View 1 (spheres, chains in turn yellow, purple):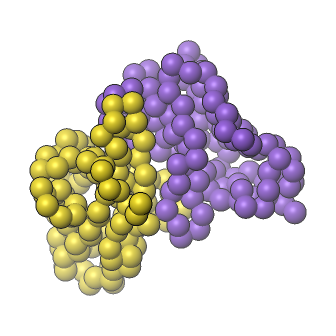
View 2 (cartoon, rainbow over the protein chains, first blue to last red):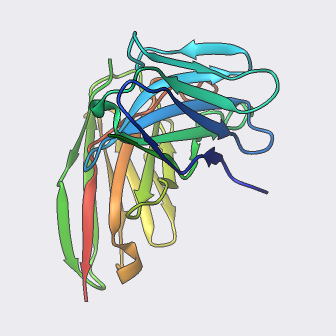
Length: 116
Length: 115
């Protein structure tokens, strides 16, 4: 049973370019979460999605950042016009659609974004 | 919103000794409290969790306690081993028990096991 998959694992972008980060949840999981981790810091919640719906985006910057989880395919976190401050590790997590375990989040390996 | 404080930021213990990491949270509505272990450059791994209807939970050498009145919870690792060296994060969720939402994390504790 494959775990949460993320790609690419490493992404280098120049300032002003777009970054696209992909996340495939664990098989059978229908809840996806995105977090950002700066060096030597904890994880900061960005957005929570279910298939075709954004449930909570309270942690996501209002500009340049967007997320989607289409009916088919992986969840995408998109960062437009990247700046150096966007350099971080971006982790995706998923949780099962089981009422008493829906809050258990399992993390992917992360995408390390470097903006030059 | 929820705020989670974690102490200490660094903890060094002798191999075989116990380690205790403490967290406090601010939102009395939080009901789910997981702990994650993250090794350098790796993903956070869920190692144990506790829900608000339970005061203590144990899994081999790892235990977690929860005091809802005081709004704090702790991770206890007994008989520490070198492979326990990592950064440990506590977290709190505003829902749990059938609901789901983003986790609020503490800043982490770097646990160092001295041989």
